Length: 403
Image 1 (tube, one colour):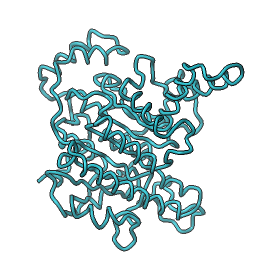
Image 2 (tube, rainbow, N blue to C red; image 1 turned 120 degrees about the horizontal axis):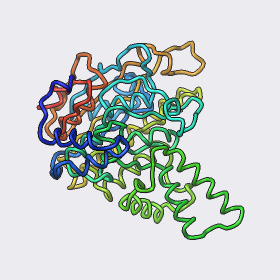
Image 3 (spheres, helix red, strand yellow; image 1 turned 45 degrees about the vertical axis):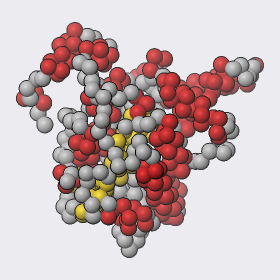
Image 4 (tube, rainbow, N blue to C red; image 1 turned 90 degrees about the vertical axis):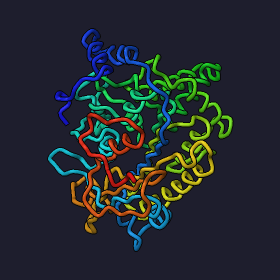
């Protein structure tokens, strides 16, 4: 889409005028203040389930081979299935988890590289995957359009993919940190807990120095953070309740993708989010070399999805007013000659083959769209559900998802 040709409405004119008077570093905050008051959000809630890290169609939606019976035999009857969704193929585009997640969040492909190559202050990271989106995410579009607080736009992330915790805002000069989402993850909890224990003077001497060092390491992962952009009162209260239930050890709370399910369940009760993205990831343990790690992970995602759907159906705040979008971050190779099965880094066709399913109020039931669709369609489609326009997305709305 060529945005330079679009007419300017009053809000866009005000933002553009403010930008001309502001320095680039402070533009996001100034624009947020200059914008006209935003209306309250009254549309459907949306829960995006990243069916990841990387899952093939065969084990997910093929009735003959699936390890996800709830998804395949129940949920596909409730909504619209796009079994032929793909990730585009062009030079430099990677079929991996971080890139795929950003494709979903922004609706646009990009050739991502570690931010250390462009920002020396962030330091160098071997095999780094610290990516920054150049165009807005669905979280930013939502919060720029409606008066939704950051704790009601949530990215829920796994403990083994810390780099993906910071996909909650782009570096776009009209959006950015002023319209970011919040993240729930075990790393965020550990960071909060260390701060609490240090403030309570739990340690002294060498142990105190050690724990301060651990906190510094956790904080350093969030290379775009600042004190004024901390986790916020609502999230800190969330962690206080989590601590009251699960304690400090980390030996009681669930782990892996089951942890993400539990975080989401608690968030729905305590934070009442309008937009959530749940980044399931355990399929990627197949890199250890065992196919059953992958197939078991698919089954765990299916169990988690069933739990989330049941929770939504039982909650008056979400029942009959929540749309689910289940979509894969990337596919997987199918090469029996590889030592490690189901890779996704070699650009094979199957690594580009994904799927999506949308179900909820207003969405046709039991429909299979038997045509090619594209991963970049997810962001504008979420926007259509929620009433915002993903103006910088390259993909097109999946019109079949609307009655």
